[in-house]
Amino acid sequence: MYPEDCIQSIIQPTDWWVKNEERKLCRGALIVAFAPHVDQVPYTFEPVGRTHADQHDTAILRVAPLSVKQPRKQTDLPVAAMPLFSGEVWAAYRAKKRPCLVIGSNNPAVDRALTRGMANRSTAPTVLAAPYYGADRNGNRAGYKPEFIERVRHCEYPQFIWDRLPISGSAESILRLDHLQPIGTHKNSYDMSEYRLSNSALEIVDELVHWLLHGGVSTDSLIAKYRNEIEETFGA
Image (cartoon, rainbow, N blue to C red; front, side, top):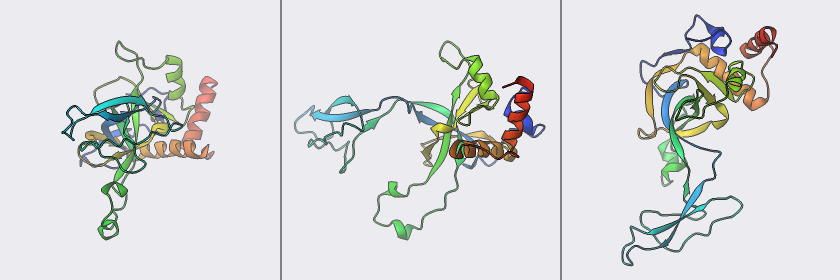
């Protein structure tokens, strides 16, 4: 399934992907969720009028770019379907349903006695997940340049991981660890796939996360050994 010049090859014959028999939301689980385009300018919705003067559940909205440098003035027009509290704004992002890898999960539950009277969002459980982007080019996807894909496959950047996912979709994918984001554990927030990373594969991903967060890995790490082999073979 994998070529010899990719990070997945260093754990062979151990599988990179294995069945998630319990369909458990755990570290290494492959899920599908909506991931926002974080590089795009978000928009905000501002109620500016009513469709009917005596109805408070509908309103006419103005869509405007949302900038942190231009604080939005909260509207005095009450809309039952769009409540806002002090300092809040409505933000809208373009998003796409993507495969995501769960990097962090199993957060300890907070004692309910400590959250009584607090908003649910204050301690609502989440998992940290990173989205995959289709790498190959076709009529519907811009994809990535082959030269870039090769360098990612050779593990030159800690924020990107090349892979072939065990589910339908793109033939090749790139995981964006620099797009790591929280995803709610509510059943409507994600779909569970049948797969998860093997323990050996998760160890490699953890090393890449360490590289991304701390600027490097130890000289005896699997990543360092793989990079040495690539440099000897390809002169990278």
